Length: 370
Image (cartoon, rainbow, N blue to C red):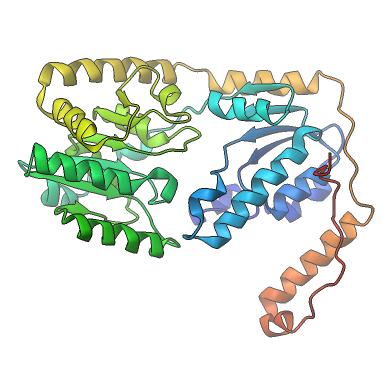
């Protein structure tokens, strides 16, 4: 790991402490999301590799909002292509992600399906959330980071139409972090003000106790995201038996697997009509929840452990793939980078005073010219 959630640090090993432990007969299971120093180090290791791809959001969604993330997503997608000749097996964590690997020229590919753990939703519901929202009003919920590709702006437009045309006693709760995207959060607040939409609540990052309470009070889970590799909150809503209405984009139809209701056009009046039906028609709600229950049962029945072990055996039983070339001085540069990182942490002023390196060449042949 290069960085880890503080809650998981005791379960991780820093990638720099890992390089001397790996040999040609070992198998590295490399979870690829954004490109990183850890990823480039993994590329240079002598071991076999099974790559698990969690998808990278197209960078254009962050233009004008987060320049650093534009660069990271662009370079991450570019770096991914180098692994076509590096990994022995490429796995998507959804069929959508596997198809993307196929389109990039990876072979062989397969799917290691996400099977979420719902134990965090067993938390005691936050009483403050229940006090605030457990009333006679209709609660429309979305869970997820407030990022442009998840289109919370469309959720606001749909909710505005629903509240105007069908139900003035409704509120929209957008539950998710927006740290680092304060500019986008300001744009959402400006949209709310322009439309004159009341009762939109954006609590920011929340605890598991608050999340559990929000699912408990939700009457409908609404999703307008345009790019998802899987979208765990959809199946969280299934687990909490909240009817789901979602835009049929990318991996979302496969994730819902016949549960919930999908819409294919972002017409606020039409979406508002669907929202109204899923809130007021008891027979329809029962039918939707039954389909969601069946989809969730199919998901839980997947043998994640057995499937992973089958893929491990597949790689270890196959002839090793020839490793792509790595720059002759990669490990010298690796050691130098570690020394510079230590200098940055211990003596930041001295680190900032260092002159920029000139004519720095690539540390590995990433095959971008091919």
